[in-house]
Image 1 (cartoon, rainbow, N blue to C red):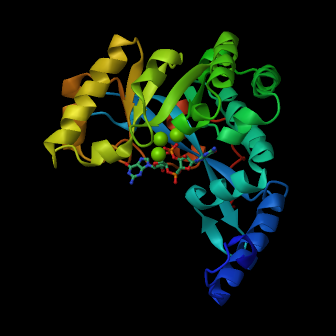
Image 2 (cartoon, rainbow, N blue to C red):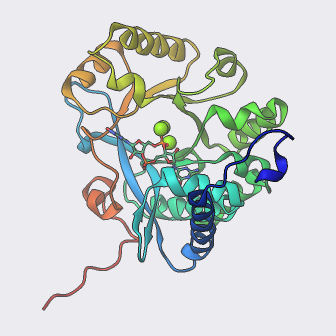
Length: 287
Ligand code: C2E
Ligand code: MG
Ligand code: MG
Ligand code: MG
């Protein structure tokens, strides 16, 4: 660590740093075998059309969210292991597994609901994403219009031209593209103009503050109008209260996602909504 520092600065030896680096290394190794060991799974969180009393029973689709159940550490949140997978390049392999699993799952539903899958920046820059999506759709039999790919602005920042060309080619396959966490990063209005998004997901941070501060309400209202003007549909993330829902319904937000409608859970918990999940393990006989 001291090597990179300029002459004259004092470097302080911090044993905890070494420990942290060792921990990360171990975690990397464990993550690299997690797929093989069946420790990864997908939870699904419903999105519902906005109605004054939206419940999961009006679900229009689900977002697939990765979960890692570590045999010893227990549950590791995606906010921890996704960045780790990104750093180590594992995200490419993991992202492929996630995409295939989500498409396979959705293809087994009796109801033709949407499934949304999060993509990492590395999946855009490594390998042939368009070819992968295409072959997974063929392989699983999921019709393209049921697949939605969620990306964050970070994905597009690095290389505008490449990003645009990839999004166009993905759209040409017939899949939908959502701008995730809108408003949380370097959100720029020019992105909305330049990139062919189908949907904008308003970041949870704005939804939390609805009813608490008038600025958030103004921003949410403006994003809804802006999105509609660009012929994009709007989903609000992190809806937890009836008050938030009422505001969003009033403002014409198209869909809502959040604990009020349903928490991320194994698809078996939403079997009634998807019309029975064909990939579910058969119920164990207790008798
Ligand atoms: P995200 O894509 O913005 O997903 C929404 C997150 O908000 C999820 O957290 C979800 O559980 C949480 N959430 C939803 N409704 C509520 C609510 O009403 N209240 C609160 N407090 N939280 C709510 P989760 O599952 O921990 O995922 C965190 C992030 O990790 C995701 O944010 C996404 O950026 C990333 N992630 C998760 N799964 C994947 C994946 O398969 N691939 C990639 N690349 N990233 C993933
Ligand atoms: Mg997402
Ligand atoms: Mg999001
Ligand atoms: Mg988020």
